[in-house]
Image (cartoon, rainbow over all chains, first blue to last red):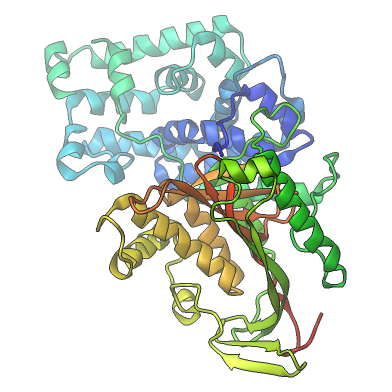
Length: 195
Length: 324
């Protein structure tokens, strides 16, 4: 007797199957939920993330008939849905960046770290970055964080946000310039040590 | 280090771990749609236990199935390709489907009587696994009828008709579950805490060989969950939590099989690696369409049945001796 072998179907196959076999969509959740949860948690904190992640997959589930089966990897699609949902919590997201910038203690990472580790977030770089992220317009912050935290390529980011690839490139370029400007006064060697 | 490197490291300590709350909502929604959407799937697989009015035929079928399976030397066929069958399930997915089904069950009082019907158990300690048995085509399996019986939801009272047709009502007829019903309903509601408690309980009460052997303790934890689900009519919420706890029991896997004495089933398995007996797999079988517990089986490492036990559905009735 051999245990059931793990699924090898790509995301598109899973979604196609789920159109007539809804439970099959659970495979997509199993595959990507932890990744999406981490991304959303980094932006909104653990409390809001639970609902946003669940809503992301439930929305995806309801919209599965519209999914383009030519896209084997559904992660950009899921990130796009999650980003739209995150936009409803923009004030909370900015409040958390500002809290880190102001106090040096990050309410987002506090539940996952001990007191000493969390104190590392008090580095100047972390605080400056948080301040910069709070000031970025959402249209720039979203592509920047999809690349930095979601590990998406520019093309995948463009697909997630429904904008041309060139737009993503220019927005990220401007966002990075802004971050560099805010971090400009910090000694790079100090950044290395503190981070 | 540039600004992107710094940004990548910001909040990097956040773990990639989905919350049980989000998982609960999603798995329940995926499973629920199955019941609200017109399906184009194949017809439901036959139930393990047919109605009491057709007992003689399935008994023959069970015997014939066992004989054929043993003669062929093939008992379990695990579908490896998902191309035309149902999607492969993970432990978590199956657990949440079963939990969703359990939540839909009616809640009954501990003293509620339930009809247990007639079941069968088979024992093939060495028949199908011996070359002589296979070459002769004669399975050394015994089939035992479990007599028609009744029990209360909490298992404290049971009833049956004796050979003279008199109803016999007795106390404490079942001792299978390690945890009494009264204690079970007080178990932790969180699946992880539930597993932690059951594992600790097994550690305290079971003698495993070698002592403290973790895999045997986990197997004992699996047995504890199976025993509770099989022996009682639990409050739906507790039954659901027990299913949800299974993904946290180490070593538990999902098995989808066709051909096990003629029945299609899906179930949870855990492998025993005791030093006292050869490796074998213990299974809890579920009906693939209703996810109700329908039986248990012990299967050898080579994939042949050693023993099976049917778990008849417990149907609430108005009192002992009353048939539904």
